[in-house]
Amino acid sequence: MIRFEHYQYNSHKNKIQSIYERSFPQSERFDFDILKKCDKEFNAHLSCILQDDEPVGMQFTVELPNDITYLMYFAVDEEYRNQDIGSKALQRLISSKDKVMLIIERPTDELTERRKNFYLRNGFYSTDIFFADTGVHYEVLISDKNYKPTEQDLLNRYRCMTNNELTWKSIKSTFNAENIKLIE
Image 1 (cartoon, rainbow, N blue to C red):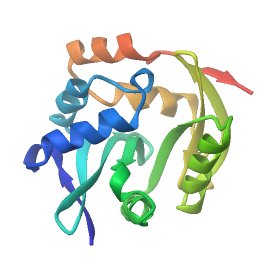
Image 2: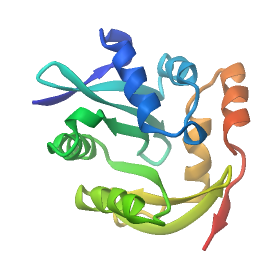
Image 3: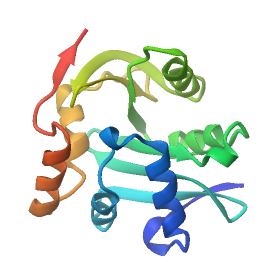
Image 4: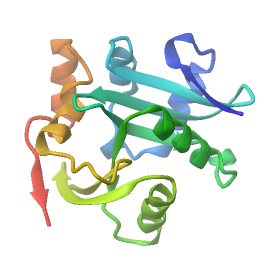
């Protein structure tokens, strides 16, 4: 059975960090300490994905206005991929939230196309919204096909991570957190 366990109450902290750092290129991730700091606040949630009490993945979500949950990071450990774990975890998240939004690297090759198709098969819809951030082109997907995310929703994905000004400065120094450059 798939379940989520909050980072603060989890005994697999090193495993969660390891999955995070191996799954995302450095150019697309925050320092893990930022996620841990944000997790201590009310809007952001760092969780371990467990299957039968075994840590198999991680996710980091941010609660936004308009009943949107932003799935910032989602990863299944390499040794557990292709076992339907990611699909089950995503479907469980989607069924528990009003709207789930995520950002993927805009598909440009077979790997990024497969990643997008994985999300589309598991309850997400393309919004045809594309933007650039730190030289990477992204696409916005959402679980509610009737909702079109706004530029403010995209800005909120960072702003709602923290109320701490020092942490906010770290966030802004990592990614373009204060304006969106939409592209076609």
